Image (cartoon, rainbow, N blue to C red; front, side, top):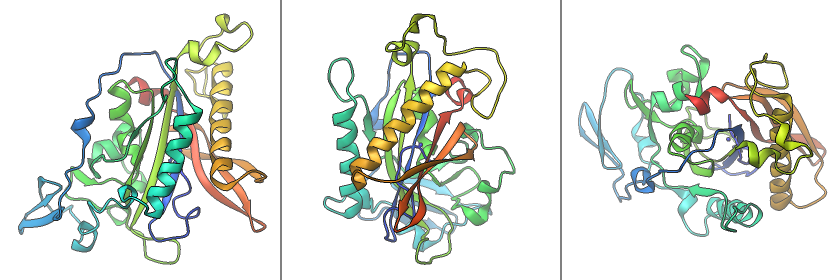
Length: 307
């Protein structure tokens, strides 16, 4: 998940290439899964990017036409396809594996197989629609600015967050997954910023049975209602459903950071705003006497699930 299940992109790992955890939890009506993993595989190549002409560039085996909206530099293109998070024993790979193994062991389906699937080889080239529109980010929102993103042209860009893959994976039928990958934002380079960093994102959708099966009188509880949006829930969600999802989300993340950093952490939750979750939260941990944000999360907007 802004980010769903990821360690803070620029704080948790003090290195130029860092990883961020984001986690949006959501509600759903269960559906059958029909997802072809091969459709999303990166094309590995020693020459991930090369200019074919003044107006075209080949990136990961695909050709893109440039226009006056494109602003990706050769320096940034040279980073695409390196995939540090998939290089065995690299620090990013080690963290990815630690998080992945934690989810594999802690969360099992009915057949005792891992509940979460992991996607760490999805192409960083996405459409503007994937990166913004499908996440309910409105036209004119500051996050869309050319000054903050790397556009290949007016329709394609380098993903600014792993959330760009949420809609496609959900609508392929997946209801519990982690996405890991390199992301690109036009940041000024300093001790905590670099134009390329890494995120790990988690999404979990709940059916009525999954959410209420261990609740007293759960058979009489409902996921949805025609209500009103409040600071604590969306208009479509019942209060009991919203509170159970929020509790599950926070407990999942508390277990994760304890696994990563050890027991005895001082943790606090801060209310915040993301366009595609409500309510939304940031987790902060106390590090050397100061509070430090390590991740963002929230209850996924039902509109995103239903659209």
